[in-house]
Length: 262
View (tube, one colour):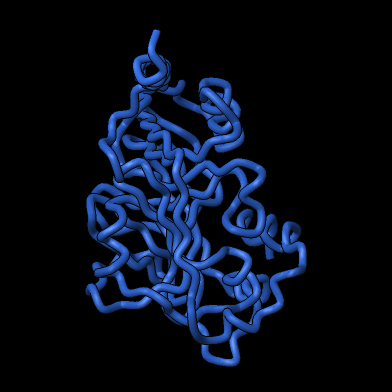
């Protein structure tokens, strides 16, 4: 076989061996604004507006300039969850210091057993994923027997670290609520850039409730997973990010922040 034909055959065989993904070229990317470690350290200065962010995805999460509430991106609309747990649609010029989005295309659709709590959902779904070394966008939609979520208050410079902010968080408990969880499952090596493991935010179906997920008990829900093998990070090119000390290991702080422990 001639070299050119051999190369063509190898490329064809690799293409056939690769898993089929629902999204087309350019859609299988997790796009991220800044680093979660910078947010943990207190960088709440917005570096990208929502109009720019939505060019890179229609589903995701994050926060806003001054850490003003929790962000849920669903169906190409950005919601800010305030300290009462109420969502507000945000205008395109609003700035974000940290966000993660992707164009969501379902590659895996599953129906978990009703009654699973959050740790149970994690164990159940992770055993069905093809690898622990990929990024996944996740959407859990349907009826939830219970949701525990939180939001955080807006801050003023000089900004305190996020570990101090969550001491003043507002926590919400809802029962028998319809809605969706959106977010990401990231591999262990994402430490420092994002949140290793699970990071989900909640938005109710009637758009009256939401927040950063702390705990849940499932009712009848559908789980959709979007394999996301590409990662793009847009780092701030001005402001305090450039001189921040990001050498520290903030894993312990992240665990407290993600779990919502005061």
